[in-house]
Image (cartoon, rainbow, N blue to C red):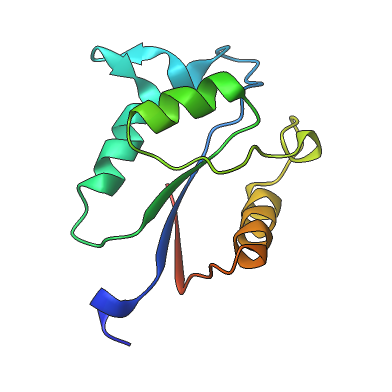
Length: 110
């Protein structure tokens, strides 16, 4: 399949419950929220795709959307705790997209 016809999902995990550095994903870094740098890198990639932020926080969702990412739904709380696996969050997101009639050929974990 040619690269320009692949359906690509950039998956950026950003749960709000960090214990080491609270709210690390939205802390300022070089004048912008940390998460915005990951979003910008995806948006500027030569490979076009959906830039999706997986978060359990409305606040994080708003910030992600302001910087160009999609957050069509929040991550369930059971997938946002300290022991949650990113692979489970990815599976959940893919199932939700599939229920909306959207599928992907490639997932890039950012």
